[in-house]
Image (cartoon, rainbow, N blue to C red; front, side, top):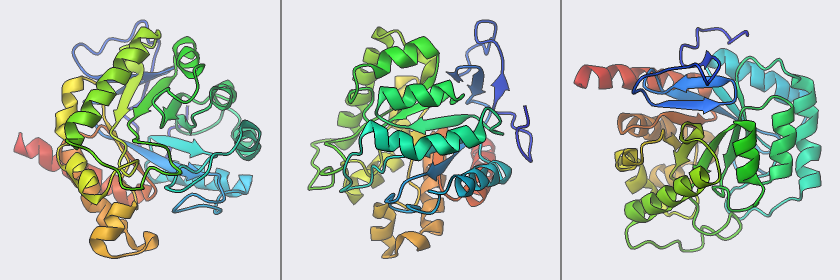
Length: 303
């Protein structure tokens, strides 16, 4: 498999039944095994939507989306997360037919020749199934398997990797005065419960990644606390995905619009990696690859 312009030592293709990583933390997604003690993964964002908060409308054309996918792979993405339904604050749900209408032209154009593993950002089992049939390896479910009762079984049977995310409320209303008594402990308890539920549904522990859900039912203070105390979630024993790229809390801290949040995103990504993030989900792949590599080198020097 062509893995892009640089060696992707983080991704090992192997038979999961014979792969052994000793005591290392691994993330398994179908035929891919990611040893997350080796390096931090870069997950590039590719939205084929008209209304996503940052890149909505830019990649509706299948060729533009395909070009961007290969560009992100060249820039250093280890995984690319494709979404066909916006979950920005205030967004409204789209039905399965519309989500697939947006998604299928890209999946058909890619075929099974993506230079890196793909993830599908969806809450719908039917959409995830179509994506998996086209070779996608990971299901990124912001509902943590709550939105569709069929999703857990699909993940268990397919061997796909799955991202379980915390969200207070739902995208349409989640930013209307979110409240927590203790945001760290409440998010941690939720993720622990969803991790247990996923395992009870037959999903293997090494298929699971956890995401505290930055910007999903949290205000600026909540988001800052979660990033600064990300290491509290390492006690759950699974890799952590963090998605801070260009988000509103960065804009509020800096007083800058979404298109001018690159350096703010870099600061948040650096802190997240320093505190244990195993995967960072970003729009600006090339720049954030540099940030992650420097922080990892510094962290190694500090240990």
